Image (tube, rainbow, N blue to C red; front, side, top):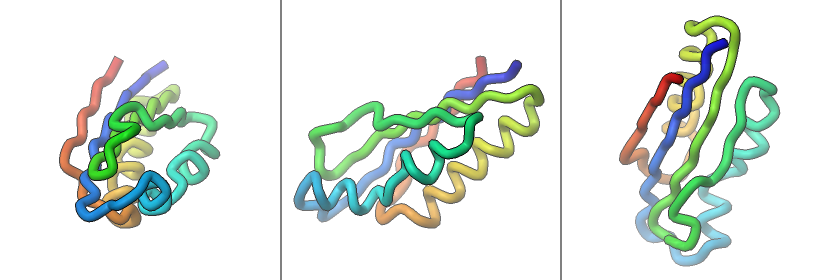
Length: 93
């Protein structure tokens, strides 16, 4: 069993409310939480309007499948979220 923890910090300049922050993040729980190999949560910066931190835990039987899912998450967030990815940390356990 392989497990990787991906933590992303996203900057959202000009965000004026928590409601706008949620809208700009675009439903990450719904998008990535459907995959049974992925657990997702907003893990930090809950009350900050200009930052959002999300953690994804990805598990699987093969390391390359886990890495492929992690890379797909990171790429999709960079393309679809109305913000700028400023930090990405991967920890393989």
